[in-house]
Length: 247
Image (cartoon, rainbow, N blue to C red; front, side, top):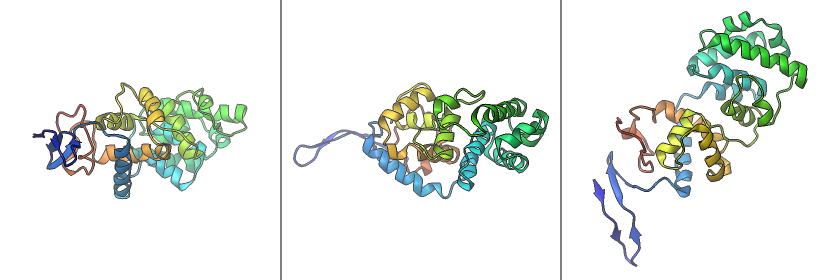
């Protein structure tokens, strides 16, 4: 149901409102003021949601190497599997030198049943060996250097910078890309485009926490298909771009 624009006292126009899920809200895209409200609500709810596995690793110990390895394990793998696989692997080797001593088969058996565990074991082995031989067993702090390693994309590199080193960066995975576009906050076609746009638009204070917040939000409420809009506290801010079915 659409409420047309009306004139308030003083001739100030009110933008059209749409009635959706019992809420009246502005049909224009989420704006720079709304993003502060959105993040505030997400932070309130975050405590009740299951945390991303990589974030748990980082919170327990800010260790860039562990964040890097956990990120590699996490790709296309459920968080509960990532958490257990990381725990098993780090119990055997928690630094590049010790990891380089393990065979690819040993690493594979420790991270199984992570998705593509054989390919990931080869990547972890190769990265660990290069860190030892070329970087003195220290993970580099620059995104361009991280991207040189096999299996490390922008998502992983940004997570290492933000969660491992506490440096400014925006990690844009499928959740961040999908939700920011669904809100109408940005309009992009790929996570890479979304990262560039968010670097221009998102307040710097939210660069580091946005990934954790939106991954948890995406896993618990704002699902890729049939999001839970009726229970979402952000429904009054969201443009629901591309949403055809919801709960």
